[in-house]
Structures are given as C-alpha cells and as structure tokens.
Image (tube, rainbow, N blue to C red; front, side, top):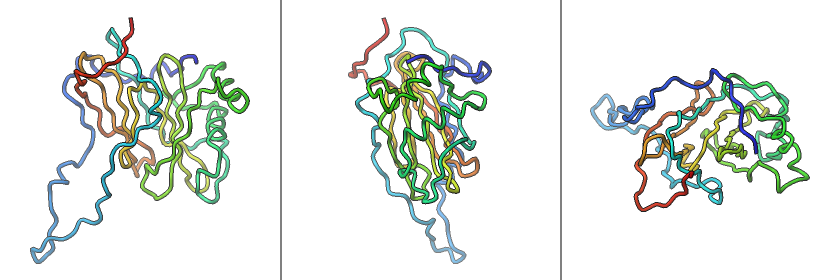
Length: 244
C-alpha cells in the first residue's frame, strides 16, 4: 500500500536530541494527596477503576523494523471533529454499523483537517474494494473497546498504510452520529489497550530505546489526546528485524 500523505506544515518542531522523557500528563501530584472530612476523618475519593493488564491489538501483525538511521519524530494528531457522511446510530451501539462502512465513509468524506492522514487514490480504491477483494484489503479486523469510560464500546480501526505504517482511527457514537476521536499514523512495534489507555510503541531515533505514547480520553476536547510520551529501554534479549 502506498504512503500516507500529510499536510507539509503538520510536523511539530521538536529537537532531535531530546533525551529526557516528556511527560504531558497533568495533575499527577494530586494522586498523592488524600482527602479528609471536616472532622479530620478520611473520606473516600470515589470508586477507583479496576486495573487491567494490557490487551494486545492485532498481535499477528509483524513489528515495524528498527531503522538503521536517524528519523524525525513521527507525527501524531488528535481529532476533535465530527465525521461527515456517517450513518445514524440511534441506539448508540457502534457495533450496529459495519466497521468497513464507517471506514469507507471517513475516506469518502475527502475533507481532512490540517495534519491528518490522507490516502492516495490507489489506496482509497483498495479500501473501497475491501468487500470484494479481501486479500488486498488494507483494513484490519475491527477492534472494540470502551476507551472513553461511557460504558459503550468505541471502534478501533487499523489501516495498513505502507512503509510499515499503520493508520489508527477511533470512532465513537455521539448524539446518534459516529464521530472520529483519534487519527494517528504510526510505525508500531506494538499497539495495546490497557484499561482506557491506547498505548503505541515505536522504534525511536535513539539507539537502545523505543518510543512509548499513551493516548487517553479527554472530556474537554472530546477526543483522545497524547498524555504521556517517553523513551523505553529495549530489552537486550529481544530480537527484532532491522533495515539493511
């Protein structure tokens, strides 16, 4: 499959020598504080979500190769916009609509905000032919997880985009209409869902390290945003294919 086309101004201006992990999550210190009632007695902060082990997405997909040269940091984008031409879902259950129908509607919209993945015409044709040419279909088996915490599953759609890249789209039903809440293009070594977090792990430009990014639901922007991005040391015992 061909390359994904991006807006030329979309790449963030970050330094190549970044060594210190970048932690974007706010309010971590609040987790260390305990609340008290007016009488000095401890009070509950409410129900704590049950911890869950990461669930691997598309484990059969081969990990991306480790580059033998320095790469610019890959682009990641949040997507707080409504999707055009989507079917109505009065029940609020996104499983009621075929995942391929949603993906095709997003591709057919043809109007992408600055910085989002835009497919070449040949790639768009492959997606549109998925119903009849399954072997050439770049759309992976749909995954469903509740990543927003509203008690309803969202659709996680993966699309092979060439050069070991994968486009990850996440959709939710809002007011009876399907809306896109995440649009990223990554070269993943792995993709996981842990609780409500979506975690990507990619080869980094630093020898001996991978890049790990954690996306989670943000109520204010009504989208999945990157809350943590850091470097993770590579296990010396692991084997991974490399580019020649």
